[in-house]
Length: 104
Image 1 (cartoon, rainbow, N blue to C red):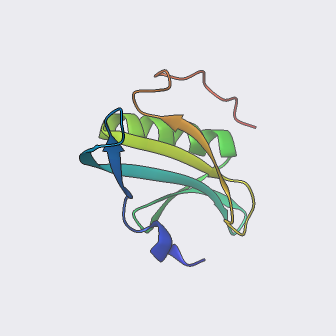
Image 2 (image 1 turned 180 degrees about the vertical axis):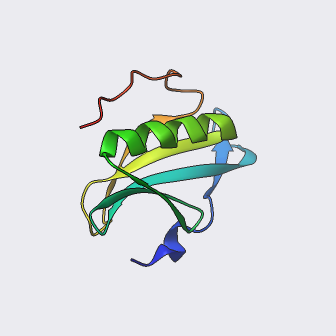
Image 3 (image 1 turned 90 degrees about the vertical axis):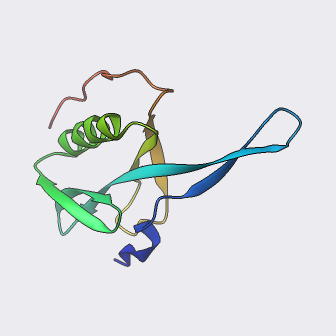
């Protein structure tokens, strides 16, 4: 896996109504991925884990993102190729603590 694409948090320009740029905001993005049959959290190019279950990795990523505050988001890989991700939690948008996923 090429982790370079995950190394730096994205920079997003938020806009006021009418489209005028407001400010630059850095997003902290946490990716839950399946690496060598183990669930891991990929953040800023480094892997953390392993976790026994996908739900355990997601719950831990959400807890970590909550501690980071700011514009933190948690994504889950839809496949092992990391071609697409599902956004599962966003700081300040989704409830915290979220309903816990059952570990399986």
